[in-house]
Image (cartoon, rainbow, N blue to C red; front, top):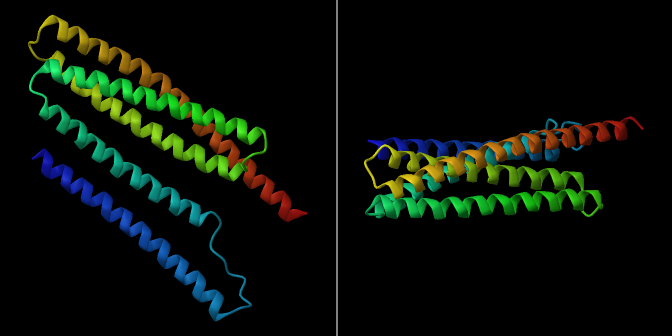
Length: 208
């Protein structure tokens, strides 16, 4: 039953992604036809329409990716014969995810330095920061799945050593996710501020 629901959910995501792509193609075709049909027209695409659609598609792709990674974790758990094997697999998965998040945070710091040094534009900074933020969000969602599986172990009658490992996974996971979610909010606010700066700079340029 769960497999059927998951399949329906995946189909909806793929359909939404295809619809967004068709919308972009349609809008682009309309824009081109107006330019070709009337060279004197001043009509253009509404501001930030392309960026908005691009962000929607990126979000849908990320959502689909999260769904596939969730299925991957469930399959790995099914292949493990005992709770000891499952918990060791979960511990390894957790450490790998945490390390990936730390690496992405370092990439964010590097981006901030490159922006300050004038090596990249503000637009490039925003685009890359958004990409990294979405990737980190995906890894945090994966960690939620790891925690959920570890909690299942605590509901079973298992040896005390396994129970201790399950508790450590849950506690470490909870603390890590809380700290990183706070960072995510800060980065989101920073990106929003940069976007506003960019808009204001464009407005000033138009008024000159």
